[in-house]
Image 1 (tube, rainbow, N blue to C red):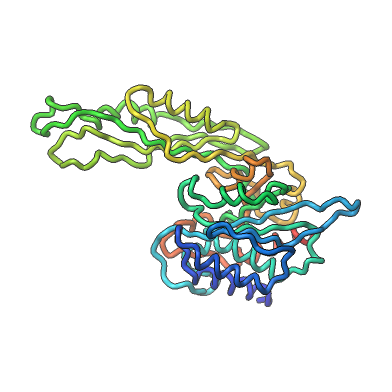
Image 2: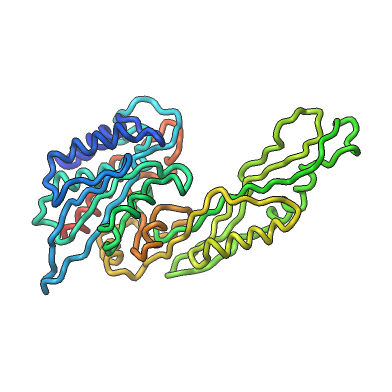
Amino acid sequence: MSAEASTLDQTLLWLCAIDSPIGEERALCDAVIERFKNVTLAAPIRRYGDSIVVPWLRGKADASGQPAPHIVLAGHLDTVRTENGPARIEGDRCFGSGSSDMKSGLGIMLTLAESLLPKDVPFNVTLVFYAREEGPFNENELGPVLDLDPELHAVDLAVCLEPSDNKLHLGCTGSIHARVTFLGKTSHSARPWQGVNAVYKAAPLLLRLEQLKPVEVTLGGMLYRTVTSVTQANDGARGRNVVPDRFVLNVNHRFSPDRTLEGEQQYLRDLVGDVAEIEFTDLSPSAPPFRDHPLVQKLVDCGVRSIEPKQAWTDVARFAALGIAAVNFGPGENAQAHQKNESTSLPLLHEGYAIMRRWLTT
């Protein structure tokens, strides 16, 4: 194993050893800031809550004297709350909460900054470490970071190092969570005719949702699917011998990048109709694939395993909303995200680092 690979492994282990479940990222944020005291930066770190913007490289120009492209590498500090043992390396795997999602990506960001010399990188590069990604859209700190840091608006490409098995995931689907509430009237279950069962009122909508087929669209050579699912149901738990007067569904609608939040909200209103109340609890926009962007093409040429559509939501949508091209690429294992006793492959980590290093130094 090379010294650089060993450093990368130990950096990931160090990140995993600092617990950072969503809402408790401060200790890790403080530790990352302390670690950057050993890195020469173009300007001081800017902190927003428990998120930081690290101006790593600045002042680069191309052969004609024009400013070189400005690249952002972005990763979230938080993890989901799940059961994990102590952070450790066993064989060719690193175990620990967030090892795949997405401290492996953070490890690459840190190791690049600590290992590469400014003269070796022909780009202007900013690193963004942010908090609260694993929660609702409106609580994600990348939102205010992008709002408050004007330098991030002048970016040519952002790479979110979400777990993707070293595959390039382009674009992302939008996501809407809606609370759909059916109202009835309580009664004793021995005399149901005296009440109105709110669960039964939901039956027609549930049947329509079951019969919905995915709607497919191809954009930039990428196939995306629009789908709608019930993910939670709750009758208020009044009692097992009570006809419920309230039944609540959480409906999650995932939509392709050619659709808008406003249009899909209206679609859900029309789908529910006047048989229930609908309240939108989480609204996340989609992002286009940016397949033809020259810096994306350059990343492809550096050895990504494959190119696929992102049939999920990620923070590339926040950059896209500002007119900034953004893609997903990371060494973490997608299947390990949010898993109990989460782990990730160290060979994948080394491969992802080599790809990013080639991309930034070519």
